[in-house]
Image (tube, rainbow, N blue to C red; front, side, top):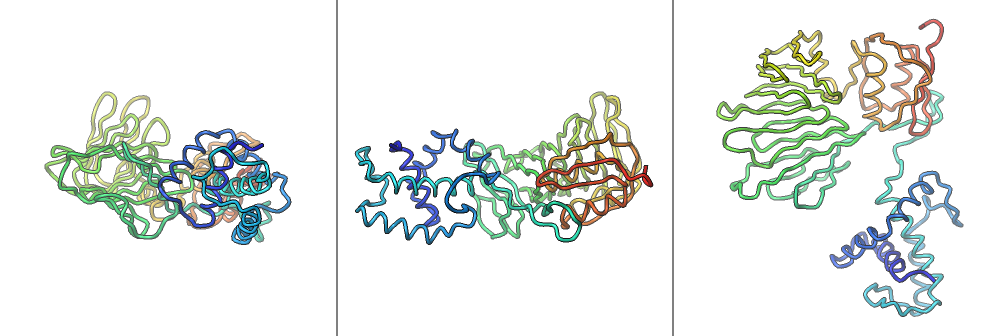
Length: 397
């Protein structure tokens, strides 16, 4: 016989599918039960992702409204009231069929809401790939210490998220709060396949790239404005001569007053490209100043300044372009992995040649692969979430 908690879990999930929402009491109970049965989610993750679950119909194409009506009829025939608060552990075995059906709804709901099925894989009818992959979209997860996470993934509807924080046109906007008594740490997590723009409380605008994190406070202090970056972001710092703007990124500390620059810290040695104004950069042993048109990176634990050959390198990704100039194949593949959410499998040792080219980021992966095949000669094959790299053709060796 099915455990009572599992029946409750099933009914709550089916109610959510029917009505689109639960009461606070129901929602809390559902969260508790999902925490109680983590093994069920782990098991379903594999089965549903590979669509090998054995059911008499395709879960992905089930008309849930129709099935709900059928299920209600079964309830009425058995005179079972679908109210989880009345379930007290005294149910008879006659509800086994209904419970099994409800569990099926639970599977569908967990699949859609928690296991995040791969809905960005599409057929390829142009380039001959096994399948194609859609480009990333706008989105992030906002974590505020002491509060529940706020999911901003692929949301374009304007809304107020919290006091002084709103989502407008897909961008996260902060306003300066009147009090600093409650000023918790905020962490903006941008996963693969995502990017987002944020305006901080001082007016500084930040474009945060895929697979990156930005850590900051809702209100900056009276003496300084400070953030921590993991990954890549482009900053347009609002001018404030009394409060320097400081970014900590791996082994670098960057200080600005009113400037614009890109920081790439995916690797241990961060790189800074300055497009406007002036920066002071502190390394492990010394500090240097650079002006617009120059960059800084760490080489053998030493800060090294260099002129930027092409300013587009600093701004291309935030403007919606891949910039491949002077990048080797591994660097290009790393970018594709972050933006398309794919895994890279290389069957050949990648050379260190540098390439020149670019393409818009709003195209599908197959189109990018077609360009890279002509650009680099490598054979690129898309297989579901995987991009397989094989040796170049003879003419490109």
